[in-house]
Image (cartoon, rainbow, N blue to C red; front, side, top):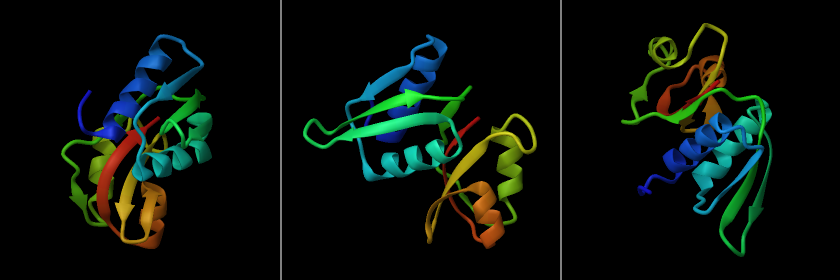
Length: 126
């Protein structure tokens, strides 16, 4: 495992989905990962997640997700550049979600376009 908690967790989710598992346990967690899981739950990519503060782990029940990956290197984008990366990482227009870290916190690329702000690309899923 690498030092990137988000990339490791998203790889575990993707591998579990490919092997048709219903749930997984991620041993390393961070606040950034928890915020990403909140967004994924809102978009029905995962059904639920449960944080275990004693063991510092999170149990994730998978939902309607095909692929999820961390974006490396974490590109910094302006509001007018989001469309370019949307075409690069997402399979079709209106399908999938990119997660952007902005000055107002983590949000989806649609929310960032509505707000008219850019930020740093963190991950995508569809």
